[in-house]
Length: 184
Image 1 (cartoon, rainbow, N blue to C red):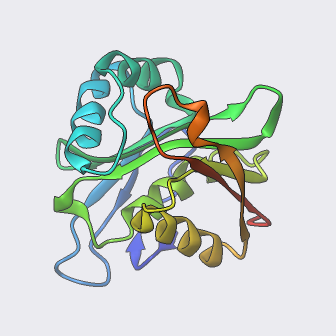
Image 2 (image 1 turned 30 degrees about the vertical axis):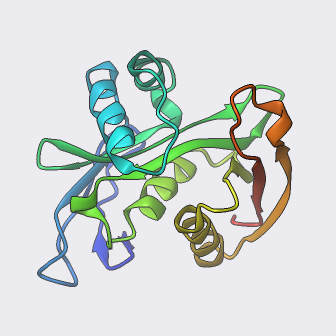
């Protein structure tokens, strides 16, 4: 299968998908796969170094990798984790995927890796028909990622009220909810 100019062999739902340098010599060879508990620390480091994300405890990333590995993905450049997406299917509506965080290390930026990580987790769950996430109004880079992803998948993106500033006890700014439908 070819995605975003990279060749990704179809190897089954639980096998890693390796992206080979297919279109440009400067594109890195990346592998996207499910995380396991041994990847949680690296996920935490990518989040910490992103400069954009709210950093959760290292324990939270261990739980995500271990308990929610089925709905998370990591990207590796060689043996180094250079990106991840974390999220889960909503318990009350498993057709909706809530994307908690997506982050890409600066070494792997510029290759549409965030979108490829989202593709990998969504494509592994054909029952998912809606993606939701919260993004602050000033995080334009994340908003562009989700807009581009929706457009490339033929979906629609709309913004609705999510977590308002008064919901947060620590002065955090509002996190409107982005809803992407129609991508299947």
